[in-house]
Image 1: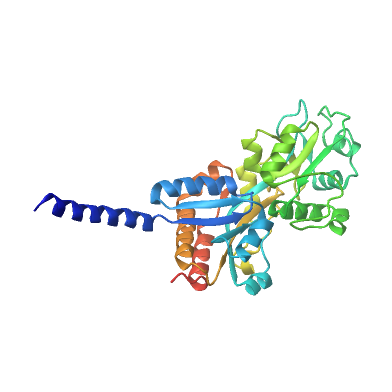
Image 2: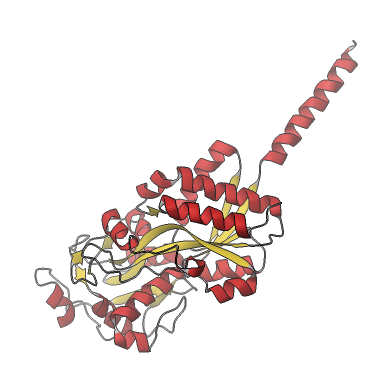
Length: 341
């Protein structure tokens, strides 16, 4: 065999190997909620190392994520504000919970440590209604007799974008404050009476970190990552609770996923002495009839891998993995509803 005869087969084999690897490497796309971004990023990094396939996830807020999946520009959408069964059916979408977490109140108050300040739903609502304007207001002092509170004005920070975090936060306020329930009410976007708007959990966390005497609401991982001061809350049972995995799990234990159509479970203001009052699930949206079935199949592989191997990674970020019986139920939902072949 001459050199030309030898080189040609090797070149062809190399080209085939490269093209096979390229064919095997698939990047799925998703967009939506900022709430689960820390855990989705961690899962994506680990999944890429193990499989070679990547996840390009845009942390743009639940409202924008819903618009992206409706426009079919991504493989999946992500939202903390679950869609109704009617909206799912109308759009041809399937919805399921991916992981659970919690929303905390964060403050920037000199001399106040995390967990030291105590608030309840009505007081938080009155702050966001603009009724409580200063930190030494009688309502706050009543809950915090031993805390040295400044007479400074409260800077209220809230989301500027359509947000599932806002959906759950305002749902909590509506359940604990009759005045809030009448107006502004609950939703992914509301007419805020007061406050400075910021985009995403990242934006609220950054704004509170930079603004003295401010208050905001963020997913717990953002509070920890940005070393923000979080508050304790008084729950439905009248108990003062701290944001911990145990209190998040206590609230999440009340969820009845099997009997709830579309898995549309809202976990705010749950009963139980140990329940954290602003606990929430975050959801995935995919089409029953995906435009790109191969990408949809790969997305489901990623989600199945995350359920199977991502629990410890989720817990490390203070998220709550979905219980095994619920995961089994979700996988049955995929098999019955999402066409990938």
